[in-house]
Amino acid sequence: MGKYQLDTKGQLAVAKYHEKQKPAKFDKKQQLEKIRAEYLKKKQKQTDK
Image (cartoon, rainbow, N blue to C red; front, side, top):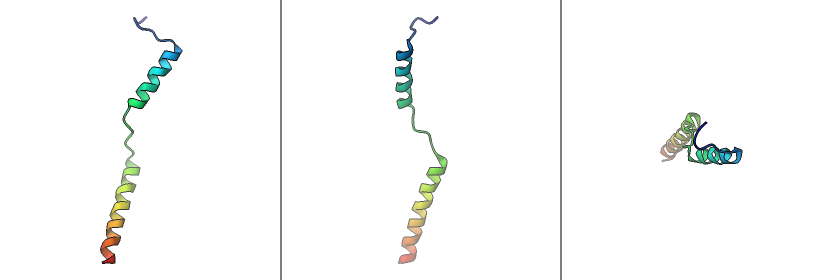
């Protein structure tokens, strides 16, 4: 038994708080897609000139 035990409502509040504080997950696929789109845009500008 811990010194500070939370009821169900308190546990949910703590879980919600920690969920907000957690940094956003790094999505590798999304990052690669973003880089690819920028590259293609830059490449298109070069060919237009």
